[in-house]
Length: 418
Image (tube, one colour):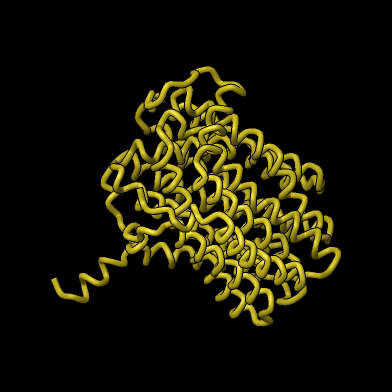
């Protein structure tokens, strides 16, 4: 084997987890369903902006998703530690599918109701809040322990690949057809592709919880409290969650994309490029991620990645050309992938299986809730001080606060790989 080939293999994405049939099916099912979901993720804020012509209403979509997310992520994680995780994932996926069908029906009927969009977004968020921690808690049961970082990287990479092609497809659909027709097509494609995750979940083996540590089996506040107590007793996990909240709440510019596309770039396919840009960087980062599992100072790497995210977002907000804005958002997306892999791996390897669902529930509330709070922040600041100030100041603040957190609580940057 030549030295060049060896060098490439060191940095190429690690595909060992795909040799496990159950993981491979779940990975493929997630890829197809997430591709469809990304069309909906663009179509809903696009429809909201078309109805209201106000970025504040687009930001309210984040709030509508946040409340059920916080409640049901914790509850769903507790349920995942008490019942067969395959069965729970199947039920929650069916509810998610129902919400997508609801979006399709309201588009076909041309309901034109911002309140209905908020309600369906909340229902979808509730189901995702249960399915996401359940799916993540399953991963260490399907692969070998030393393959967990690679499995997480593959998951994030394929999800971000969907976040590239999904928004681009949505932008194309919305540019080719009238808004009424384009929205129906986007929601319809999502409903069809989501059947892939139902198939993959159905083919999973039974996954009853394991008893690695003593604990209650009943699902309730006592059960949720067990997970929270374990989390609070583990400073590294608390800090990894905190730094992610900082990155997403302060620097996520997503709620500004519909208005930026319309006012800066004339609408059309520009909205697809903006929604895809962060994911493009994440995919490129994933395809060259062979080095991630070899980093020992994972906590320090996490902090550096978050700082790079904030700086890249701030610079993107100053760009006046679409291509440059996309490139800088892609750099931010690469940094975001790196930080996400390390946060997820820390949690999965530190937490015992009997608590993994509950801790993944907290993780889901943080990871999915942070961007939604970021949507609300960005929309509210844009309505008061303008798009550029909202975008740029958020990125700078995220980088600065991340450094301050790391210096004030050095346990995170001292964290070695377990």
